[in-house]
Image (cartoon, rainbow, N blue to C red; front, side, top):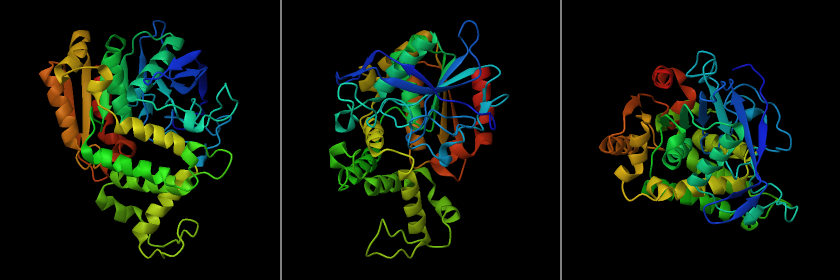
Length: 379
């Protein structure tokens, strides 16, 4: 898929109700397909993306009509080395279905989309969304595509929360579940870091409660939020390798303070770059859904055994990846998930990737994941 040009497709629903009871009229799902569905539509793999990712997971996509945030940084698929003929997600055997989140800014209906009732951007009126909403949104897409039961559901990072919740809410609709560097509940540390990011955006003078589309956007707040999150994606030892020695003073982001440290310069660059490809309201919706996430609550289960009982009944086979240098979803979180799956008597394979790249390893080191992932999906 590396050099193959792909196009975003769209699915229009009549309406969609989110967890808080709000109903969105005529919402749109942006998605891409890699490979072809077989006659029985039984070879589909549903892929959920990470926090700031998109539905564009493989190939080259240079333009999405009406999406102002699409730039060169996004043209190459974020999992190019995993998806394609003979790769971990083998497109000669499977059809990969990759949707953009509800609330997204890459073609799915989100805060920047126009509300049919007002013909203006939703802005602050766009509802909160949950991980369960993302699972139901994806299920609605599968209904439109005629896919009753998946071969597998796969998700890295925040996408792993969605993949797990999909298997909890729709156990009859998948056979295999793959969770990469993820969890099934939130740690206090993560919730604090996410709250810091929410405050960064909320306190930007241009945020205006989320109604900023007719004026200046809250770029400083979004850049700061990204910097707070970025330090959890990269292992601390890798910062020195990534930070360039030259120092750039970002005048539009700083006034009195003069940057003297290459690490500060690197982080400012990362934050500024991010504002060119993402919407602050979308970032808030996804961070909020992550912060409030607990798989037990999403499935209205009292215990882990109850949560995974449907997986036992349906014969799910789990593959859980940990990254030993992960500061975002710590390996202890996957160990807890695996222990609870075992208590519920659900077949699970747990593998730890040894890497010095931290959480980003799942994006950067396909050779560390591909053999096990390919075997799990094809066995």
